[in-house]
Length: 469
Image (tube, rainbow, N blue to C red; front, side, top):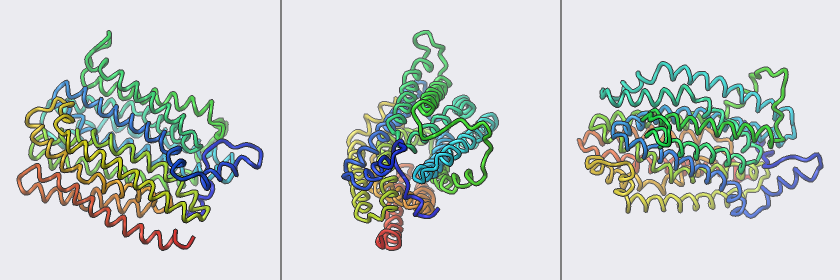
């Protein structure tokens, strides 16, 4: 993908008049950057905060069943994350291609891109349905020999995978709304899905208000119900409010070129998300060699840190179209200022998260019915891992900048350094000390290496692509 393709990103509906597209472009090129960043990012930040909140609430309710149930959900996380990564990564590819076609004022190409995106998501959903029938037991048996954890895990993960069409549908149609600048509508569908999940969790887990008591299966059904509600609302909003896309194509056929273009951008994003799944799976194996309680702690950490990281991801999703548009418009001053503003905001959010983790680790773990053993492992874990939060803010910002400039390979390199190349060997070597609490230092070591890599990459990108503008 050439950088000039980013020239046409815009954020709203098109009129048949000449003035409308120009006004939209001027907003990206002339609105004060602080106001613009807030306007674009805030809906995404709010929706991601809610997503993080219901992940936490889900685990809080599951923890009331038992620590083994919480451990099972923690072990299931890599597969769930992989499904989300596949959906979001493909959605990123659709987003990028759709935005370019919108900028080119090619209505048919916009609709063709959307319809091919729907086709890709249907195939992906079928693949995960089949995997959900065959792999959950094999997957859990590869991580633990505890029969109760395996039983809980298979029950939970099978439902989440077999009924995953809601997840894929919700992410697809939310991305189509975002691609055409309707982030508020996207936020509405995400909020609806998250609230549905939160409401149904206690009802289905504990059998309240006349609902059946399903235990950990209830947590899984609450999750998929929320996803189906989000899917239904985002689909309805697209059909009724998204006038930029025509979903009626009587002679639709899959287009190999469009699908290939979607995956040119989508595959790096899928890999970026998926390495988190690989990382978590392997870290769980390292921790499980000590005690499964350490795995539960790591799972709780992931739920808690998402409440800090998700707003930063939303913020950085907002910077992508700003940097991309101004790169196409050759506005170096707005690119550099946008990067600085985003980095500062991300560091402030992460610093607040660091403070919370350092001061209140016992209270945070207490929300998950932590046992004495879980507290003894969890308190130092939260305090040590949180030290990397402000450094991570810089890395996440620069990864988003690389993506905005079409440097998918660079963003992938930084993420691999951050999550695989340094973190896993460091965690394994620290585990050889015989003290599970030493493993948490690996996160600080890896983040330091990744920030150095991202600075080197940014220096190269600035000299080659931004400075000459």
